[in-house]
Image 1 (cartoon, rainbow, N blue to C red):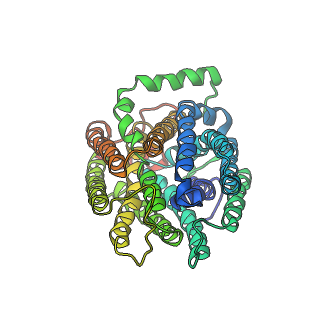
Image 2: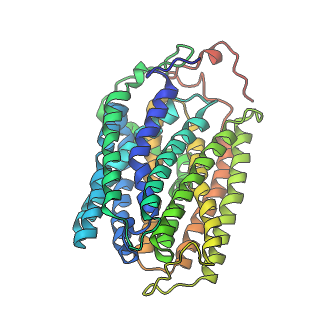
Length: 449
């Protein structure tokens, strides 16, 4: 039986996934309730606060990789947990006062800290995995996050099952805040320095030269001259837009208990999507990394395009007056079609962005370079989410919002296919002097075409 030790890369990845679950995972649960858990007329405020959040996140993302390489994943994750309970507390404040300043300020602060937590977690999944396990490490974090999102959604669903109120009760906010705070202590006691991590074969990950902050910022600047990353800009930008569309439609079309059910099922499908995409990307029945990438992008494209076409049809059949939202129950006719689409978009939320991250992380095995890539990926992703929230806050019709997001993800799929075909190499081991390959690679046992 495998001994459990904190220095195991897999254990560190699981711990990072738990921290994500306690922070972003619970945040996803309350986001999917729509309107921050408030009534439908709070949707505009929440979209404004989230647009600010992700705009700040976008700009911080260009430098967060340097923060990780300078201060390490432990400190970065601890700082990263701080914004989530404050943000949920601001939503609680807003439901009692209707004052918008606190959610907007809290959203800006969360934009800073959320980028740090995501960058540190991505750094762990990118650099602690081997080329054979990278897809599984990335998807594992998403799966764990989705487990916590599902549990949070089930809490809200249980409380709201027979609710007649248009918003979630205070008890939901309190439970969510306590869970988020606990993430700080998990990071404090369970995350260790990368230099202390050892694979099962006894090898360390890499040599970690300390070049100083100024040199690190210079290294960060070199990312903008890499044409591969420029080509992947739109796929990164489009990675997480489904949650914005679904959260807004959920709040505008359905009552609170149906919103809670939709939230639960969206998160359940994220778990299923994480398992599926991990198996696809690390499927060694397909020995070529390039072929695995191309096959995976093709499968993701079928799912994504089907979902957006279905959502367009559903909106045509169910037009809405913003001044008089329908607030359907799960017993009403339009719910059935939306329920199926909700499942598809739950899968989309995970499989699209995990594939993007896998392609980008295949460019190198150097941990410090992967830290910079992690910050870039999460920063550009946030820019796409900010733009999606901006389309909602600007008052565009839901059909126009769907058309915009469909276009962005479709263009991203074309670029993902091209980059998987062109730039995913057989291996990067033995090509980077700071990287210590696994023992089987050093012994010449690794077989990769």
